Image 1: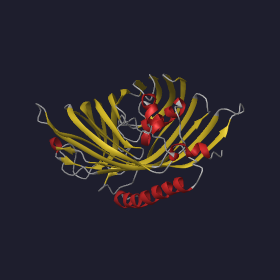
Image 2 (image 1 turned 60 degrees about the vertical axis):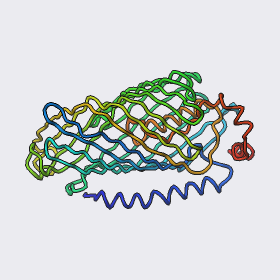
Image 3 (image 1 turned 135 degrees about the horizontal axis):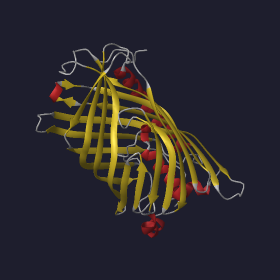
Image 4 (image 1 turned 180 degrees about the vertical axis):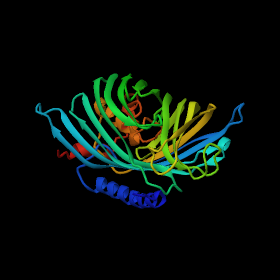
Length: 381
């Protein structure tokens, strides 16, 4: 099966906006509100400048990511104790990424597209536990790649337990391409500190961040995380293999830096992030024909460390049920952000956790509006 990424991307883009508008109208017009997670459209950019080392290697990389997620079904019901509320959330997701690596040292420049669509499922028992499952099939290849398309998928299954407001842990497993190849890895993580105040997140595979509020509308984050992927390409001018050779390009790097996220209101937020990209590797596996099993040869290139710049924004739609200091639901929202698109990446502005709520509680009460409590006025589970 051959898939044309440009035409597929155009179809997805034409489908994305109407679906989000429908979701926004649906959440606004139907009362009482049914969902806890709002539909969201997001955009992210990541790039590194040209970098030359003593061996005259030059490498630039840029990617643009646009996507959305939308709640398809939310169910809420009382537990047997008639106090706790269990919730079930089914989300649909789609994501388009355009990569542009410029490899001057081998005379190659690729334009690569990645198309992904999938589902995410969350279940909260209304007490301290959240179960999460995600599945995201994707195609990742160069636009001029007209050979047999190879589909891949990422997935994750995670159990999260909010032991206290200032401590939670996660265990599970994931299938990921963040490290340039299909790996089935355990997920082990913990949060130390209250999630709507300053806290430390530690998660394996490598994703460590110290997050803290900056005033009422901003978050700061010092982080270290892995970033990478896998792509099907065709050589054009390379000195490593004859022109027209099919190849699998694998990329991995470690990002260490600082991110500032600003939430201008409940419907819009943006971020900017910068730091150093280290331990950068490119792995080329060349194939003689369309069959990837045919006597491949591999070349590994070490790339110099570099600065990076990333920025993006998120637009959310409609009204939702309020979580109101519910630490378990906040951990659910955090899971929704950290495992976006099946990747171990967190550079996004789509988190929906209030900033240091208790500090501004008095001001919130003084400025309380009907829309802030309308789901309490007319509840129907």
